[in-house]
Amino acid sequence: MEPASRITPFKPREDEVQPLRTPPHNFEAEMMVLGALLANNKAFDRVSEFLLPEHFADDRHGKIYAAIGKLIERGSLANSVTLKNYFEQAGGEGAATLAELGGAPYLAKLAGAVVTVVNAIDYARTVYDLYLRRQLIDIGEEVTNTAYSFDLETTAAQQIEAAEQRLFNLASLGNSERSFSGFATALRKAIDMAEAAHRRQSHVTGVTTGLIDLDRKLGGLHPSDLIILAGRPGMGKTSLATKIAFSAAKARQDWLRNNPNPAPDAVPEGGVVAFFSLEMSSEQLAGRLLAEQTEIPSDKIRRGEVRGDDFLKFAQVSKDFATLPLFIDDTPAVSVAQLRTRARRLHRTHGLGMIVVDYLQLMSASAGQRPENRVQEISMITRGLKAIAKELQVPVIALSQLSRAVEAREDKRPQLADLRESGSIEQDADVVMFVYRAAYYKREPTREDGETQEQYAKRHEEWQAEINLIYNEADVLIEKQRHGPTGKVTLFFDGAFTKFDNLARSDSSDDGH
Image (cartoon, rainbow, N blue to C red; front, side, top):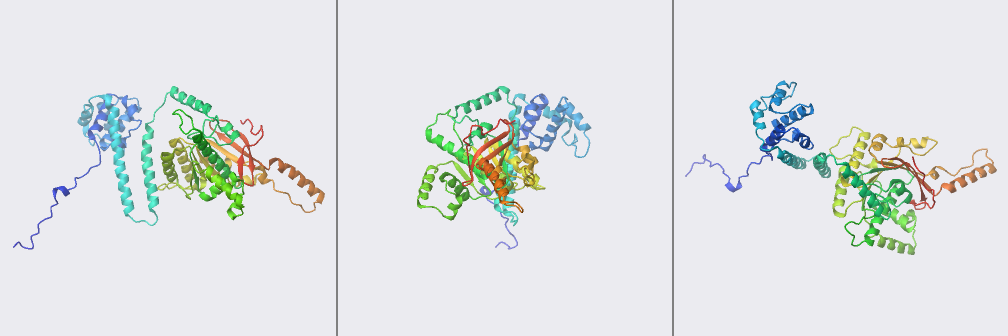
């Protein structure tokens, strides 16, 4: 019998042994890249568009690549001899020494490693691809470790958002590979846009707003543009944004109905709209649209003060707009990363023509970002919205509040300086528009002390005459437009239904400046 003190060590079966996995890398490809650059410095211009020193798995190769770049930027020749001198003369804390890099023999080995300089770009892409794979592994490990560690201050949803942000940042690295395009190419695209606008029934280059004078001034809402629509509370900016969103979706719905089998070169009208309503619920927003279309005041709909035949109107509107390509997300305090993810998903499944955000100041910075103050946070949000507009090639309308400085002035017309955190908003926006209703500030006069009845009656009569002229009017003040004129557009406004529409008047807009 075998003594109890002798224990046979455990040996796993061969099929149970997991091979040791190392992060993906290709040192030979890295050496080929460096050798090609040393043989032909001109290749650096193309490779450096996307490849950085930190993309090399071997830290020595990254330092040599950085040194090659510095020598070329100085106008010097980069070869094994000049690199040797560079590292011998390099001083300062953290500077790599020649010995650490393998000495002069290693530089000579790199110079002789290249077979042909023609494949320098292919080798560089291999190095870059492997770097992305290593970063994906790091992100995956961090996501796993974070999920295992239970933190009361960080919810699972916030962890997902932080992971999405890191993945987006990683995906965005490849955008730097875009290079110059010839003027002929850019000119061709501009002519194609003009041709598409000519073939559209609305004759606008972008997505229609449904408001003739506004479309004429803006040329529609252009892809990749960030449009700021601002106003003081009570001016109707949400109603105007709703009108624009509904009109764009309705134009797309009508176009699809009239073109069930569109030709490949057909130019569609309108667009699928994503409406991010941070202030109102989706039911409230739908109620507004229902009130506008049925011309039944929304407050009566909310209180249930409707007649029997009103439900026939509701049924007809529901039938007409059952396929309306308008999608509402009423998540409160949505972040830029969440908005981007949901907009991308909608873009993949239904296509996307426009994004509306109501409103800017209710958004939050993405998880993982730590802005020092609110101004910096708003700057991050506006830059993020502009990036989304460019990435998805759609216009983004972001509503914004105005500061109370407007109320302190005698002239209540808003100005660019009235934008809250105006610096970043004004800088990032392609178009800035203000909604202004003069009638809002024309309160009905009350009789003053010592005033006779005749004097009060005269003042009231003057007020009535003035209010009759402007009661159903609202101005959209275009204070900034990168690719068009600024100026004023006057619209029809129905206060009973908070509804904007075209003004039946030939001089409804000025010439701008």
